[in-house]
Length: 81
Image (cartoon, rainbow, N blue to C red; front, side, top):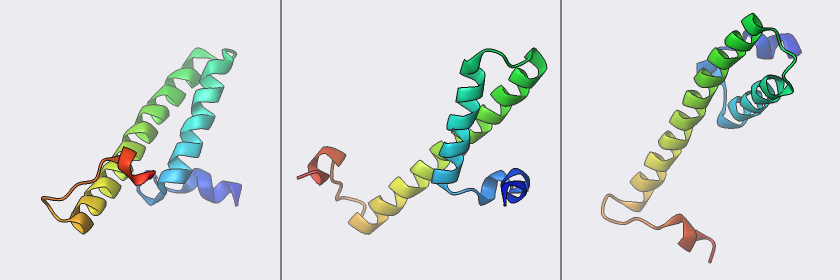
């Protein structure tokens, strides 16, 4: 199953999967013992994962706005109440 995750394309990842992978990349980069070449690859992968996660969040926000109608919006702070 671990092999499936490595070959899975970025578009197929859910937000949660992408975020988890991004956290793993950040952890490896912060560790500081990764060779330069690998660090550059991890950085590139991290930027792609961050963009993917941001797009997923934007898509979710647009879906919620569509459910609310174009004129009605609810601030996230109000959702807690």
